[in-house]
Length: 145
Image 1: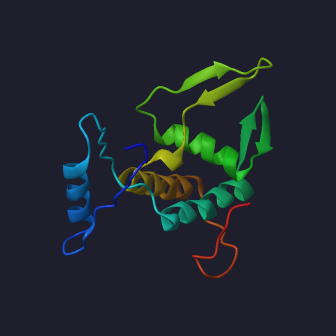
Image 2: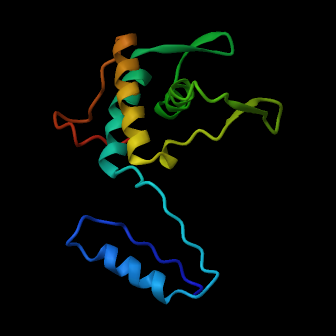
């Protein structure tokens, strides 16, 4: 088997579990099987951007010794590192001498981890007096950038 097959397990009576079991039974020896938590949803991903826009438009941050307005992506880098405070950040020297923080990607969070991140993000916004900025009056109509 040279192809990659992915089954998203759903509650019975959905056939996904039976199909996955059948695939296991017919797979040759040596086939690799990996289980992983469900990844974040599009709704989860979209929910963070109004908060990041709020930080971007309402709060300056010191960069290279000067108070600066940051982009939503830059705020995401700062806040993600703060959220993962239990893990020491890995910082590498940049190609031209700057500094680069390695390995912080919310896109790799499971649904549960992303839920924790989103709750933390809302609390961080409240702590700094930042309110989310939505593109329209509908909370589900925000698209970054």
